[in-house]
Length: 271
Figure (tube, rainbow, N blue to C red):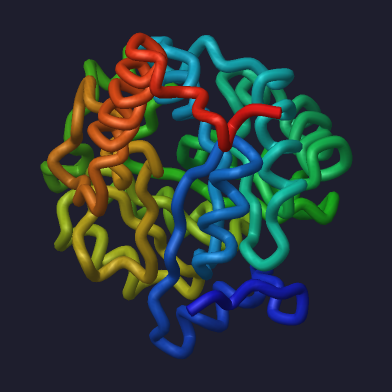
């Protein structure tokens, strides 16, 4: 059933209250107007305009080439479509790492120029000051710990984080520091389910898991993975709910056949 409508717009307060009530939070990525319109009408709680668009939309092999201008462009398209969901925009590589001033300025652009209602940034305690400054400027901040794709070269590839005691302790400490800095929620990516459950219990803010087990307060996945649209690689933590790629290929082949055989356009498609 559609829950579309402006009356129940999802905000950072909404998702905090959902955690308090024990209600699970749903989140998907979107990068364009028609997709965002569709999943907003379906009733999704939050939409992430992720820098993952670098891989699933633009064909790069990592998120690193994605720029602020690219993120602003796609966030505008998504924001124009959405009425209910909270739209969160990823801050791309080097848009916040250099200084808290950069972080505030670029996050502000996401809200002011692109219509987002919050931003997400990757990393731990080293971004506590940037988080504090953004929140002080009135910008809702979603933190992101565990596997942080912008640091993929430093992490040595896409692998589970926090498997040993020291790594787990550091992620838990980072989570507490970022909550204290004012983050309204936290993405946990590719961490052991037991660690994610421990962090979720320790924090007052909601956790959103991706490859972090079922005991987070919510879940996020890349839309193209969920819909079976991106077939180059499917992570272990993805459940495919559709096979859109196969469907599109089938439709394209039928169209090609019709054109070649002169079956399209028919009289009903002509003026």
